[in-house]
Image (cartoon, rainbow, N blue to C red; front, side, top):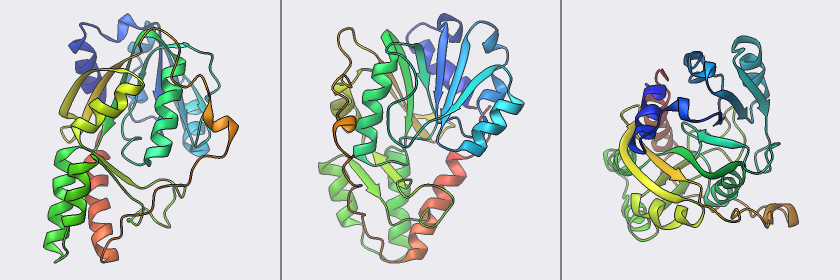
Length: 258
């Protein structure tokens, strides 16, 4: 249950939701998590953003304890520097490539106050091994995937079952090795904890702290030039394989959010 999962992540730092005057859900969708946060909103001012205007509209109409708004696929968000004490999400960084991730890590650092916490989910080792198993069962060779995961620690698959679906072209499947998160995400935050299967018993949860000093996003590089294109897709040998992979990810990441 996501609210409880997030609460357990905060407890690692000896805190609860009540310790954060302002909190943001980054990528709220139709409010599956926010629906269960009415009591939390009595002490914490809750905000939410998502790229899906229809979903945000539903949240605005049915979840009165949340100030929800639409954001673009890339930064900036319409909030001042250091506006939030806490930022949390479920299953955003599982679907965007490295360029988009870096942009959003920098932006979340910008809108989080120094000392504030950020809780983000990733598809880590277990989902990746399911991906490898799916390829093998389909008679495909996943060696190039395992080698990239071993050496780079990050894989983005653009040729997946999300192609042609209801989401933007940049929305696909991403997998993180824990060491990659500690090494790369530490450019933006202090990585305080990495909990395998900490989100819904499947995705990994990462607890981050906004350091003191200037935000890594201060240069706003995405304002100066268009964002680089998504990484070249990791090809799937058969379309059916990609669909199997995404069905697994959807099944595990799309369960009850309470």
